[in-house]
Image (cartoon, rainbow, N blue to C red; front, side, top):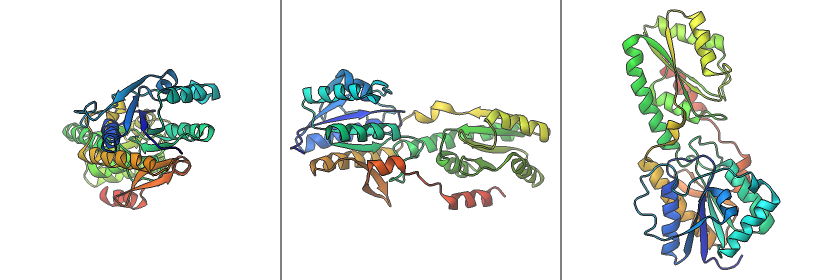
Length: 327
């Protein structure tokens, strides 16, 4: 690996709060070490097209508090081909870019790994996804912000549930893992939490809600991860409860993409700043194919292939806490 003088930074896959703060950190760390930095618009798609912008410390002012990503994000079918990756490499060399910081999730890191293997191009990953489904870090960028957004919305829905003696099924993001549902459910005092890792079953769900009813609860909140296996979808759950517990007025709220937007929390801004500094310093130390992450409140590194292949584990203790709190 030669001496690094110019670093490219990009965001790819789904956006998440904190991405702008991470871009800012990478750019300002480059400025601190007298390196040039280049923003790559629209992820790998923009890399193939040479859609670059020179960045400096002043280019990234006023973005630490902004959600989304000012560099935009896109998925690239062309980058999945050898020809597309070759064109991306040609564009980077044409711009004299020596290394990459990629901010995204599993797909972003998979692309970075393949790109490094084919062209021996230095890459460091920063995990940006609200699902928190990347191994090698306790928190991905945007996860904390999404949690706070979900809890705030559930608090508001509970006001209506209590006023009308209603049962609300609230679907949150989490196709493969239930981190958002579990933590937000505990934080918002949900009566039940349905996640992909634990299949409660329809009959047990009814039993649980009946116990809640008998204990004097006139309204209930059930938080459902979108990947939960209890029913084929949240609306099927509603229909099943309507049939077996007609005393409940059942409603559904699907929170959707509102969970991915909004101003990042202080935690995510600080985490993004720490990760950005570490990513640039890793490249300067000659390291590559690593993801920076947070482990025991320290910024650590994990090989990209392990971050991709590894699965983040659900907190079993939190499931037990949830069961106790729903009494």
